[in-house]
Length: 335
Image (tube, rainbow, N blue to C red):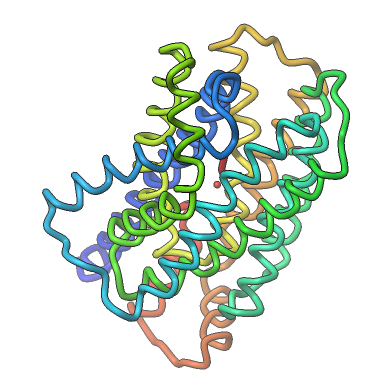
């Protein structure tokens, strides 16, 4: 009975974090369909600002209703850095870069983001890099490239487009690593709300362009932009932060490789784009790699590694709870 009472909270934490990660993955995958529509009527900077403005309004209303208050002073540095890099710069660079290169090149370049997260997380946050994680990321990266190449049209790749995608990947990685410490003192809602607001402020120079594009854009494109702000941004970034607070940045980054596989499925169901053999194989590789990177090691070995990495000695139920949360399937490439 005592064992059951100790393991129930851990299992509940696993389920909640896993559910949060699933919501994030699905919504970020769905964003690609909306970006395709909205991107035809809105310039990259205008689309980023409109998306962030819609997200900031939705998050601000929830934050006010919940009365969570201002984030602690210790969290502001991480919030500001992630807001500038991930919410602001990343979205503009990615929107612009994907207009300059074909899907295969974009998949190859942008999907180095989770790898950079793992490297930066190990260097700056002390995240462990177990062989399972590295092997899973390698398999998923190969799958993401296969999906991108198989879905490419006859487009080309400009130097500018490649540079923009590289900068987007670097900004994404830097934003995630900066966000992780902020979640140690602020809630997921606080970090997401004010990070989104910082990103919107960074994109304010595109306000005039947004007004001009909105005047000529079809209603469907504008609705897709609002959808991007409310769901893949406001909701999905909050569930991402919730899961990130309960695992390492490296593991969260590895799980983003599930997105290309879901994009293939959604394009098949929503757009009647029947995937070819290479696309299906790439999607399967993405999911297989995520499964490997999220697989559960032996509890005893995992506990020893985490204890040595943190330089702390934990025992009994506390150690078991820490390991269970760390290796839970709680964890997405963000559009």
